[in-house]
Length: 107
Length: 154
Image 1 (cartoon, rainbow over the protein chains, first blue to last red):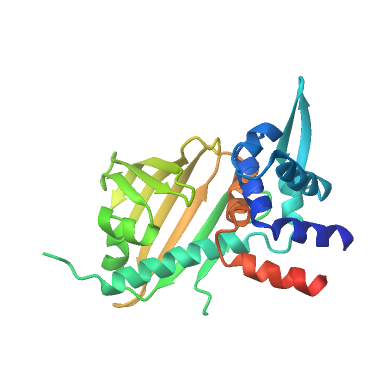
Image 2 (cartoon, chains in turn blue, cyan; image 1 turned 180 degrees about the vertical axis):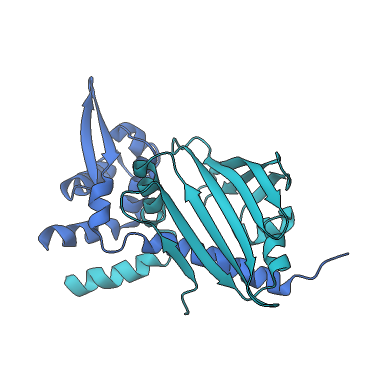
């Protein structure tokens, strides 16, 4: 339970969610991650540290560089991880329905 | 709100099925996928190209709040009006691979219709990664729900 609480706290922060989004697409070095934010390098390092501590990010040594990548297994531990995906499609389809209900063919 | 959209994603499979019933006649539902200006409205994306025909291709572009542009594209393999669209889908510069999508349109009554989207990914890992993307992006209401949970366990 201790661990799970950490995961939820980790993703409650918008900057940390943004970091996850970046790293989910490709493994990145801390420098490359920090370049995407206006915050100081220290602030971003702290966020990365929290994400690593709750195992959402994993370190990988590649030569002299450390790369962070997204630990999808950890994400799965969060209850019903499909729900946001379903919500996304539901929102999209609701919009489709609204648009088409108002739709009148122009010709 | 009523839950109309269903996602079936069996564990360990490289595919998933999204189904949804609409309060729309079949023709209107299908049209929402065919005409560029309508796609732009409900997808919230810019349509650069949409050739709604067999062997046609499409290209969309969205701009995120930071002003970064994200491209999506694919080719249409099958185009059967009011029945079926088979196409590929790829997020550009995302190394998430290409997915194959089967859209099946079905009439339920004169005023209602159903869409089922069968998506096949290159691997199980890729499917799972794609599934988790909206979660990571925090672009949806899920965040508020999670915030509630966080507050409760604190």
